[in-house]
Image (tube, rainbow, N blue to C red; front, side):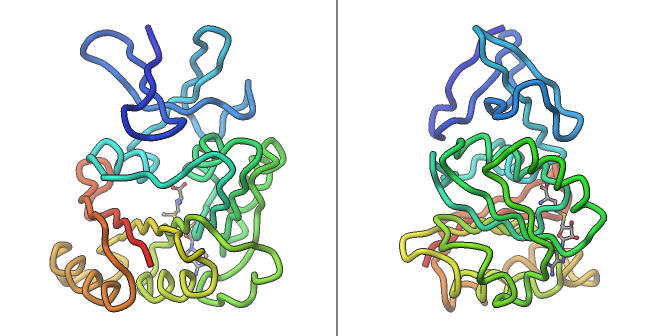
Amino acid sequence: MRVIEHEKFENIHWIEFDEKKKKLATVNLSPGNKVYDEKLVEFRGTEYRLWDPYRSKLAAAILRGIKDVPIKEEFKILYLGAASGTTASHIADIIGAGGMVYCIEISSRPLRDLLTVCEQRKNMSPILADATEVESYHALVEQADLIYQDVAHPEQTNIALENSKTYLKDDGKLLVAMKARSIDVTKEPREIFRGEMEKLEEELEILDSKLLDPYAKDHAMLLLQK
Ligand SMILES: C[S@@+](CC[C@H](N)C(=O)[O-])C[C@H]1O[C@@H](n2cnc3c(N)ncnc32)[C@H](O)[C@@H]1O
């Protein structure tokens, strides 16, 4: 087994088990602790967490070849729809102790598990709030280098636009995990993505888009900037 830096993205690694099998991983910021059922792997004194693309749409987007993962050490991230922290915890690994992930989640059930994750990781802040009520968390967050949105909500596009107007730095980027079935169950996913991208393009620039099949069916990841 060996560990190789990802060829493009900071603090993201490949764990190569043999010539045919390699998996994404991040360095575990909270050694010994798992967040979901991920595997922990030790290599030369560092603990890595395997990053499951079937559980995290950001890992799926990397495997599908997204052009950029605009996450760097010390970044401030606004995460909309954090659930119990699966993807948010990998982002926390990437930004390191000097960064911060503000985790907005509307539902108290996943938030309970998220609280445990945030106790183990001081660079994650749990916030029980509705991402459609942008002003309600104004006092609890700061301007973001990246907004990561995964809310599975029919108003996903407006949520992305309103939050980026309020919280995105001028040179910041936005990653939107779009779930076609949450927007309209009657239309073809590609048709839905086209329509939502047209709306987003009125105010933001689309840098890349990737379909996430087979990891997340009828989902796309969009990369945008102001
Ligand atoms: C697909 S799950 C997120 C999974 C998570 N991003 C991950 O990869 O680990 C979507 C989450 O969005 C939350 N959500 C839905 N509507 C929301 C809203 N208006 N504001 C904040 N969170 C919302 C749901 O409760 C759910 O936990």
